[in-house]
Image 1 (cartoon, rainbow, N blue to C red):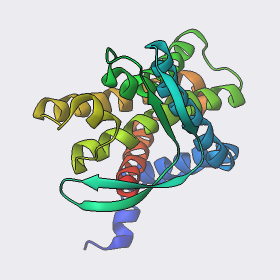
Image 2: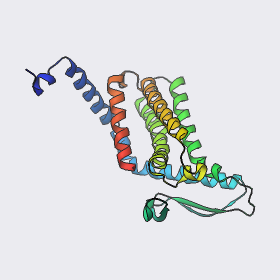
Image 3: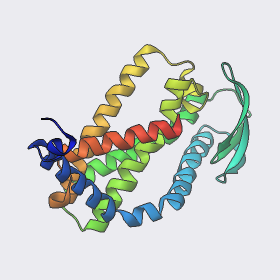
Image 4: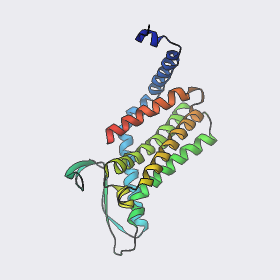
Length: 226
């Protein structure tokens, strides 16, 4: 007769229990990274706004305001009306001429984040099984954090028509963008597995643990930002 206890002691459950144990140990080993979450978010805000500002200066503009401190902003949304939201930072700028690209300014932080993720992949390709502090720093701060930074802007743009950086670059999302975003997400999941397998070596998560683990955090991330 089927019972919850019989399911738990079935041949499938040792694999599930093993995956849960490995995920728990993986989280425990990264405890000090969780302590750096708030300072890390501020650092990525600085990088984000600096990328905007750098592209403005590169095109001959001038920065009139630069902030990396949280503040409330008024948003005028075509579907949800007028509301206020918290922004981690912002940049204001001006140009004496009209020959500049708003899209380049809007997309500059995500080019930088993509470059950081590429750096993590190259590091994993050329440096196998470095010391844990270095491996975890590369995986968390050069791959996971930049990917989260891109997703934090991309998902609200696609799902909620959020008028942020991607809207400034592309206007309303088109059907092709959903397919490209799905391909990007699948690539990130596969690349993340490969990077952590190369960096952590015997401490890396196996596919049976990594993909449910990554899927859980991706779902949690979507709930928090959407």
